[in-house]
Length: 297
Image (cartoon, rainbow, N blue to C red):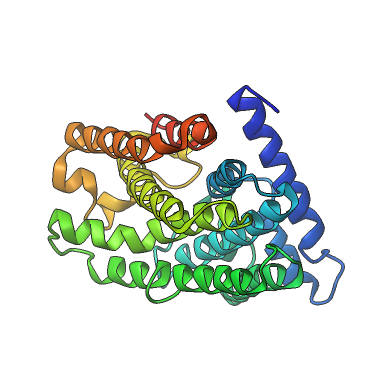
């Protein structure tokens, strides 16, 4: 077992990168331009936070690492597709992602649209092609869980709420509702799919993990809002200050920097408390949460 968090995280990131390298279509496979854009949008960038959460939850549940790698890759592909679409001119109209030109800038809008579509369907393809649990019904539930998290009642719905909220004053509960869906749904899926690669945890324990993931998902967004205000474009790897420029409601615009920081710490504390009943088995989840909170402050 790798004790040090950084070494563990690096190992997980390398594992997911290798899996994605092998599973994404080769650039010489027709249609070459689309496949090149898919690989461009997924490989060689990002902290892979969602896969890290899947690996940490899988470790807690005693799941087979190969199975967890598959679900972690599926979640990352959904995340990558969402970034490609979010950056389009009809959405956030951004030109920089992960320190390089966004997909529609590097290629074109039509290719970017098809890239997102293709990454999303590839995620479900890899979830369906291998046995991920010992109970087939459980695997079907996992596929349905990811579909729900990505769709109109999850991430896509949250994005629709976000677009509709530009220039409008939101209350804190309304902002929380938006980000429970836009950001939190996929983070919760990452945790739950990782844990469900094993049948060791009971319904009560899975419920606690879901509550933990809800806290982490909100904390992740609070940190992002702080970073968008304080960090540079070079640090972010994407255009800084876009939320304020586009008059979007954020935790910073509602609470201010100081209170937003405090909220992130409170959410981390709440997440930690939920994990108390798991003892030392929850170490990795605590470490990933700490990484999410502190990586940008």
